[in-house]
Image 1: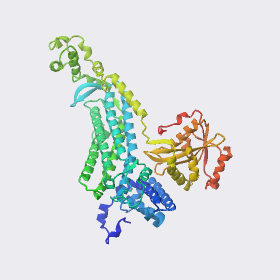
Image 2: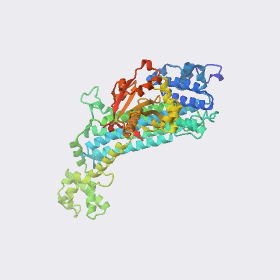
Image 3: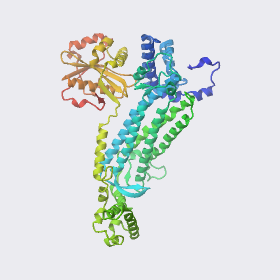
Image 4: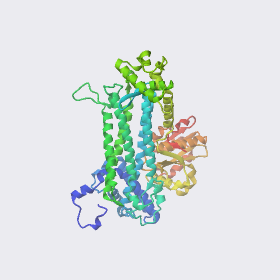
Length: 626
């Protein structure tokens, strides 16, 4: 059913419908549309448009729909709905009847799609940051392995000065570090919520937009409704981040293609990332790297296309803006895949140290050292530069490396040259002399390597922050506890009980949004139980559950509790964290008494597990725990 048909007396032409509809690509926003719709239903309940009972009915139906979408997103494509918004609304109406038609009160597809897309963009940042981090770590690992490997450095593709393979790796670590921080900065600017801006002039209902923004994990609402529905800067910034990073990856690929070529023979790529020729059996082609280089143009083109789409659009929303998604989706997918492939290329790479050293010694790459030597003898650099140029011409004529010229040949060009010139012309001396910060000297490379290793080790890429609960978290905790209680996975808890027990709870925040909760209930025997563990639907499988359990166990350990139990229908999850099965008959009576509240008490399928905490301090993982 179209969301806009009342004004029209004729049906849309089939060709126009096909041209106009966006479901074939915006189906990827299904989870974000559902999450945004749940938040809107709560906002409507607080204004009195929906009763609490109606809101809960809508939320349960939307959460059920989200779980189905997560299981099989492709099912959406079988529909003839115009876009993802009409698909979600249609399924909601099927589930709850005419009540579903109330949900769009005060909301426009303009602020709806702007919110969906911003939510999607925000959710792409953590996995991309993780990929950038993994690529940097692999570069550092190769640099550490090849720390002593001498490599010719190039300018204009001419051998210039010797460096090391480690120094080359660290150059790309720095490029990717800029990519990483650029993406972090872009995330900060997209962290504002457009929902509640209506079509262009704002909503006609007294929505608390600050509360609405926070419920969706945004730091604040947007400030201007016209800008809110027409802003796509976050799309441009993400695509710009992708372009910069793909340019770095393309240069990385080009370097390795050259190093892998028969003309240089500096390294050999793994069979896992190369292919052969259909005609020439001897060929081993660096296809992974060539595709990375080629796909950079695809990302650049998507960015340019988006800039052209937006450059002359009047305020506010225009249908042109439907073109914001396909290029963005493809650009970020491509960037992610290329980061993954570039990291894979670095695995099992074989460097031919003899070839790289031989090349570094050729091409008169020690000419700058010769000039510096003359400067140390009191000759002005410009004059020294000219003298060394003449010496190089002489050495080429004699078909000798400069370091093999006899002393009398050197003296033809300058009487200040003595026997002490020869140690200065060695590769080791050339490298060691580049001793300023950031240089190729072994000591500076070691410093850079150690610094990069420390920085990467301390970096948290999980995006999950786990902390003790606050009273301001009660709405989110109550929502999650009630959701999982309604489908029989947790014991129900009243608001009063949750207020009294808030000190027992920990919450997980993912990019600013409360995404999970768990509590530690301590019995008077000193035994403790993990209760009310739940993750916001749509956030499962991202590490929140593990991080919460680790936080709860750390709390129990700090309280000198030796034994923690849990009753669960997912024992495998807890067993991966060190829990082992135990018998319910061994649990204190007070534990089992709480089961009287459980709707499944007569057909209980929960498993009892326990963990002894002595010596378990290594359980705490990478999620940021406060």
